[in-house]
Length: 101
Image (cartoon, rainbow, N blue to C red; front, top):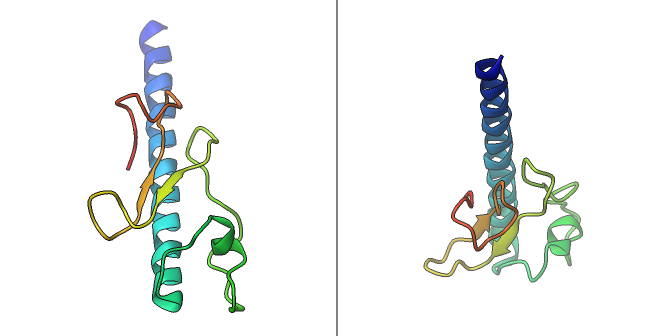
């Protein structure tokens, strides 16, 4: 029983991590398309939903991580020109070492 419960917990965690990685990829892709069209980073997440001067919509809704929390976005990134999209991971805190990028 204990082994079965541990396996279920591990499987749920892996599914949440995978869902988070998919959400991060979707958001990065939307930011890249926005930058290609507008020549700059979006100033807010709202610009990805309702961009200025454009009939394009880069996202229908803002993706959330596998735990249902919003993703953290920095564009341009801290160390490189590309956007950084980060999930706070299972802890829900960006200060913990379980972040997902």
